[in-house]
Image (tube, rainbow over all chains, first blue to last red):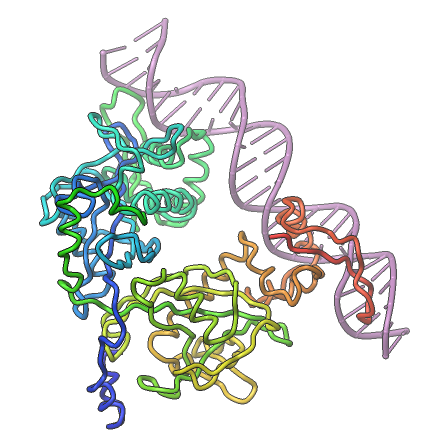
Length: 254
Length: 254
DNA sequence: ACAAAAGTGTTCTATGTACACCCATGT
DNA sequence: ACATGGGTGTACATAGAACACTTTTGT
């Protein structure tokens, strides 16, 4: 793809040279990221950033930022912004969906390519960015009005989020809930995926699915899906000093 | 979202008024569409358009075109372009993926939001657009070199396609193959989904999965998945004059 | 009679779900 | 002793794949 111009006719090179990239009015493009984590209470959390400037000043939003046109792919934009706003590096990102209504940003037409990241809480260290006042984790909760987010001190209704980020997050949760059944997503949320017990993994599944699961059945499907395929290995070691029967430890090989 | 400015402070209105939308260099954005059909031979086909201008002049590409910034959503771009290039209207489109490498188009950085459409062949009527010389259906085939496309007269290797369209199409086929198991996609490919036999439906599944299926098992899962849920209804009529035993006719209600 | 599709039945295995039960540990 | 998680086994319903077999049409 990079050396397309090497095999070009003179005529085509001339065309490319004289092509006006601004013949069409262009939209802005951003990459936004829905970052999921598990907190100390084993609840599914999302990372939100308080906007420091207009529009939606002081509203909470998911991290993201503008594409550096011509310099990086949107995948790279997502990686860069995630690092700039949260310090996270080398995190696998999954593309979720692209949102492109003309009025989703009051400034101008913005196309947002949205990604999902799954990270252990320990890797998070927040840094205030240039238009980010504050970054915090919020527990994902449901009540009569549907989705909302809580922090211990504050509760944020989905309607209080900036832009169309409530829709984005709802879609991300749905996708995560579906993916968890056939993709090894849950392992990325473990505190330490090189040494974990089945119970710890079950807590993640329960939090994402928002319902309790049967221990025996969970074990069986764990064995079938991950252990036999080699994605997870038995460490042949037992957990210690947890005030209960020592549990077998496993390691994620993905 | 539309009346965001009504609830704004004076300060914010001023900000929005004086905001320079061009503070960042912007990429171009297109919506491209992978159109699938079944042909007379019950083979899965894709719609390709021969490019009339540079770049990739005379190469085959999937239909698509630039977003009209500020005037339409990307979903609308996809619908509009599909209509302009193929005459198809009111076709449900499914967003597939967004491609955004900076060098996928030699002219400039282009972000392409790609959609998939499933249409019966009868609805297709080609019209030459402004940069579309020719539109044709190609059978999707596989050989030692992988994916290729054939037309009866010409055979096109995936490497002959314009831009990164080979990757796009490969992804679209994979997704279609997965979706067919749990989404009612196949019904959109029937010649007449208000009156079809189980056999006709089976041919579509076989073509997409690229392998033959067991009749008895296919019937059973058809009953379970679609008939009992009411997505498909038994017309209580039999097909006639087909040179074989008359078959029960069904109607898709989706 | 024959080809081709229409349609029924059985068997085996894998999976999902429900549930009863025992084991080991620290407090 | 007991709460908490660790771990095993049984039972039932359903889904998927393999396969054998009958029926109805036009040619």
